[in-house]
Length: 269
Image (cartoon, rainbow, N blue to C red):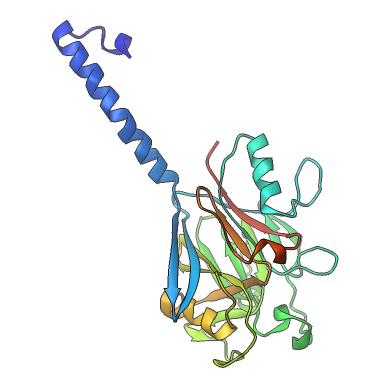
């Protein structure tokens, strides 16, 4: 640092050095804030939720299924984190993505790095077969121009635009400002649940319940608590979120099973 100020008079040289040294912690703090995520515990109607907001103008959201080197599914957030460390990338955030089938493959659309690995699924299954068949289901996607959106699967297909990443899941929690009409306020179906919305074009919000909740309460969180006009259910029972420096939230560890899709935000290498 002294060499940088060697052309200055001696009387000013040390003042410049000390001033620059004082700036270093501030610059480091600014860089840390630039990388930091908006992560908070929220209480809504007597239930607790962990909510993470991704600013797509500052952070890159990615979607992962298999290690590109081995072709083996990551299966867990820990494994994805280890992969990142081997490649010089620090994991800031992760959450499991959409619902998958008995063969451990995404049940619906899955787009990773612009490549469609599983096509859009518009089959109308038996609602008793699982949440994916509760109508309407939907797609969360990030587009090449950097904006994100949640759409019903039919609307996504009609739009026909290419995407950078996408996951299909179901059911939709909120559709154009209205709760999914299939949800019952007094439902006794209580599970840990996770979901996603995009309240602004470059703002993505993930939420996971800290205790079991029903669909109606979870949907109201997104509409009334988070201001989302469209929101998508991601998964339940096994859902967790990870935030660097905070650890895991959501379902307890003993409930977990191998994941297929995993959302992630890595620190830039």
